[in-house]
Image (cartoon, rainbow, N blue to C red; front, side, top):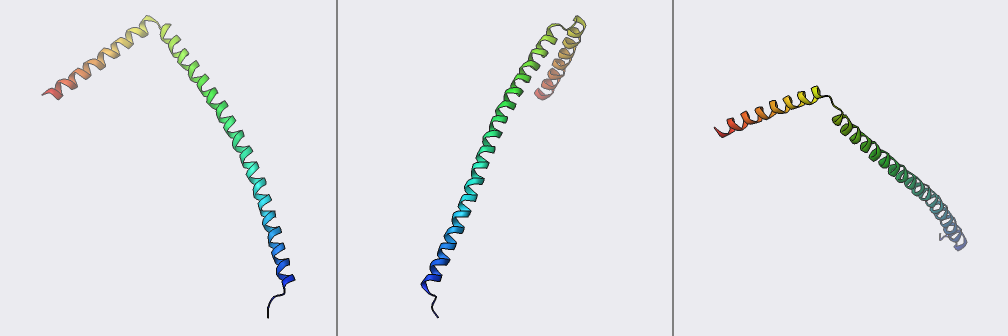
Amino acid sequence: MSVSHPDTFEQLQLRIRQMVELYQKEKTENGQLKKKSIELEEKLKLDDNRLNDLEEKYNKLKISKALIASSNDVHDAKLKVNRMVREIDKCIALLNR
């Protein structure tokens, strides 16, 4: 009960065709994934640039707000800083005991 050579050859050809089809399918999918990866990387770069721009604008806004703060705001800020310094001094004194 041996298998004839033509049947074995046809089976081999069929398997080779199947493998080639699978290869082509995977190759196509790989190409699509690479394209999507490149698109996502470009989008990430754009988003990073936008974030950097927004952070820069935010920092400029903070600086400008600090410069135009009224004298009352500055006085309140100094009082808060002085209060914190006194609290820190008290903590240091307690630690030194």
